[in-house]
Structures are given as structure tokens and as C-alpha cells.
Image (cartoon, rainbow, N blue to C red):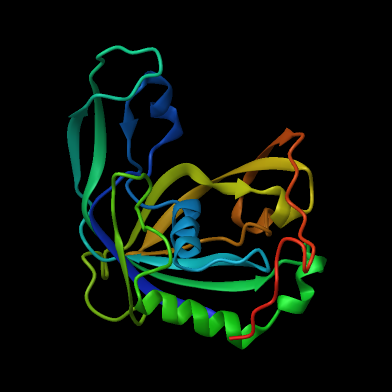
Length: 235
């Protein structure tokens, strides 16, 4: 059942790099086989975002067969040097995304901006226009594009493929302005795909999706005051 304020779109590009944190300390990056929740959330926030609400990714559909390609790159180093590293990218990717937004209850100062139809209509227009900011798949060099679509429409390379278990993967961050706590959290979960569809768990429901949380202290979030650092625009 489709949730309120749902938007659906497809995102595609020549390359993607949803880097596995385990491979990064060695200076080389290796992509997960599928996108993470946080990467998809970053894409929809690049399309349209306001601190008044929080985007939730409900599900994605992998449209093209998973392929990888390795490239030799020379990373930028602050202290100089001419090192060579190998990055392994996903190649020729396309995903259908279904997401919805809910009001950020930890932002009571923005309550006057909770105009449901306004934000929903702006989000749909932004999808039609390709997003408000640059879209990329996991990392900056992987430029991507968004277009409206109907989730489930068209053929996927993984239709009737069955279930694939990708093991424990990075899920996303618990940011202070979304949790109301002055902590930055990191979530891990066991990601599975069935017939090309990944149903992401709600990050607020820890027990139901076997999410592991870790926290770092001493983080805070910006406060807003109407007429001082923001204003309400009726569209």
C-alpha cells in the first residue's frame, strides 16, 4: 500500500560506488553490489529537501544486472605523493525508487511550514526537472540522472530471480536533527533482495529490521528562528 506523500522515480548512470567501509582504510574502494539506504536518501534529498520533513526510503528495484568494473585512480593527497589505487565501481546501473516524507517532530520551530500539498507537489516537480542539486550514485564522480516513473513498471533483470542475501551492510546515519539527541549514530543491517526489490526497514524500528546502532557523542544541530534565518514561502 502506497504511503502518504510518496514519490516514485528512477535514477540511473554509467557508474556507481556505494563503497564498503571495510575496504576504505587501505586507500582503495570497493562498491557494495546494491545501493545503501543512506545513498538513496541522499539522492532524494538532492532532488528536494527541507528541514521541515524527513525522507524515508521504502523500497528500490534493481533494473539492470549487477556488473563491476575496476579502475586505476590517483587519489588526491594533502601531503603530496603519486600513489595508485584501484576503485571497483558498479557499471551501467538503474534503480526505481519509492520514498515518502514525514514531518520532523524534532523541529517544532518549523511547524508553520508543515504544508503537505506544497512540499509534495514541489518534490514531484523537482523530479520532473531532474532535481535541485547534482545527483550522484554514492560518490561525486558517479554522475546520475533522475526521471519520474511508476514503481514496478517495466522489466528488471531480476524478475522472478528469487532471494539474494548480501549480508551485513551499512544502512545509514542517525543524525541529531532527526533523532533529537546530540549524538551521531551509525546503522548496520542485513540487506536482502527478492525478485529485484529491496524493502528497506524503517530506521526508527530497530527491533523489526535487526539494525545495529553505534553512537558518537557531542553532536548538535542547527536551530531555526522564523524571520531570522528562514522564512515561510507559500507556493
